[in-house]
Figure 1: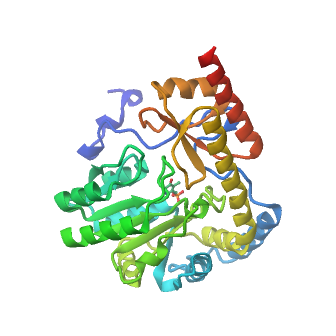
Figure 2: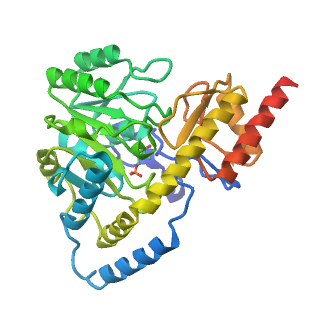
Figure 3: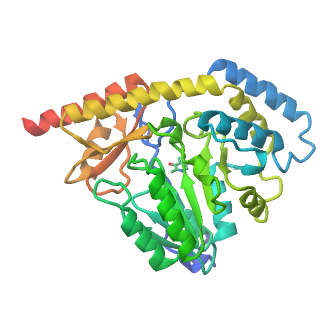
Length: 372
Ligand SMILES: *Cc1c(COP(=O)(O)O)cnc(C)c1O
């Protein structure tokens, strides 16, 4: 064994990690990249200036550890949630971490782990299953209807049958764009409480783009319900790595048992606080993206494609006998979309109007080729 030929499997890694691949969308260098659900708009210049100011201020005390409890940031996130949902939450109900992926990891470390189970209704966000595996949690793939809505009866049945410790409900769902009805969440919550009781995590990464209100008010009287959020999509700050949750204060106390001390750097806290000062401008971009999303849906349908109803900043379209071949042909025209492995379907993120035009030109051209 020469040093160059040593691979992962030559190392004493955990058995369940052998032969697995890390998460990652192919990042190809093409003119139009509509594959990772990012916000296409860079942060506005006044916000960039404000971030620089707040980071400069934070830099003066970088010899000290950051606020371990991110008190100011959690207060501002709580104020944002209260203002945008009309449901009052306070700092004690909110917890923040490095992306909602870390929030989910902390929840799984607290409520799941070896010997415990988590369930999601697939196709859905693959990281729920991957973080489960990373924390030693068993993963169960629950069912969805053909139109990608959650079938309440079969989902509740899966919960009763497997008695999972954590239930993931993604609304709007990725990669399909499908929103979940409040009654569905309530029914599945009740099934999960009767079965175990278990923690129900509603992943609302895309909720700002939805036609419907947030499911956040459902945490009232439901101590085992958590809503997770992120600044990666609506706030256009995927590079910041800031996710958060809202729940009963006991859930916030519980995740402190596993969080690393000082997990959220002073730079991250300062940057997120600056972004929250510019919420109104950023939510203005969200309105533009919602209009572009609706335009993509209408144009794709007019061109003869099937489109799944979308409440997110992306659209699932099809149906294709060989989705990957179509993905490649769109890429050949300089547009990168996402093949999430859902048979027959591809996903396109709403970009700027120009990017969306480039995408629409590409898929219209494909239709023409087909029919000629
Ligand atoms: C993009 C996405 C997230 C965001 O993860 P971050 O770690 O906050 O960037 C969370 N959940 C879903 C369903 C997503 O698609």
